[in-house]
Length: 418
Image (tube, rainbow, N blue to C red; front, side):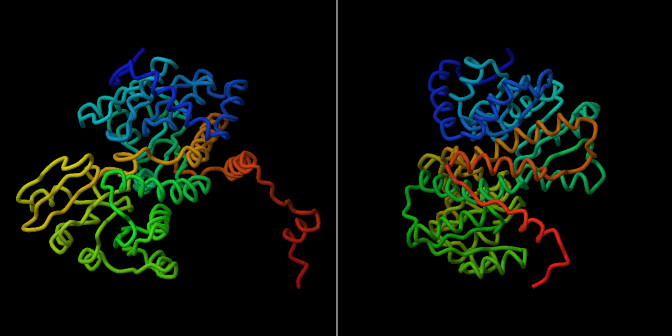
């Protein structure tokens, strides 16, 4: 069995972890049972580049139950849970190549192995796998039925690829599904980002001035949670509509160059580069803390900060590095990588239940429509969205209304007025 993990002896603990997560993922468990009977992925090879966590493990097991030959590699070197990786290999026979803290060379070796498996379906969290395919394995594109993209950053990259006329295969933008971004991005990122900051630093959130860079669904969720714990929240944005929304939600809105002077804690959640840059470092207060909850470690210009620093003290405490710039200290949390996974456990299982159920059903949709999907970035079908939402409501014991025939007819007509 192909694998590269830290230690198979960690499998017992990893099994407990993935089973614990599975208890809070009832929708995915139901789909797994359905897949076990119908085998929608029989004979299909799936390569996934995702965060190797207990929640992801449950998705991989659902795909395997559906007949898939699964290869899993890490989408982030600091998010891999080594014990979960061991459990997937030892107890469930999956091909897993992921080691917490792996270097760049190892990371790309794993990506290459995932594509050498000649997948017919791919899953991405950041589009690194598909990017590599377009650069090095173009000849495989014709054999891929479709790719699922899980995160905002990845969808941005893939839409750019499509806009330049270079996309070679159909992509499903799972990140853009309402069952993903309205819940996973808002509630999951909101809670887990704060969790990562507190675990890394132990600070009291109440009374702090927290600067949120970006007011997409992730930024909204984090700003909401930070305010709920007593922080003064400032939002920085480039989008006038989102800026207006943040202001009407009760947050202070200003440019980063102004926010840099007053913030205690900064968190970037944009998907772009150099959101916090050299000019911002120069005006920050002594003791300012910087972290990132966007997918890649490019939102904070750490190379510029390192160049400015007279000295860097790595690991002043777990997941915190200290940069001495003149007479002040600037702290970077989680090496600028996803703070909710670098310093915490990522999103709660219950919210990932919806995101990964959407992933699973979108993958089934790709198989059912093999050869029919245009080469472009597709939205998740509304039927898939509604099914996931209804299954989640059912698992929560929540019932909702339905339209009467008269109400449905009224909404479908134009003749009836007031």
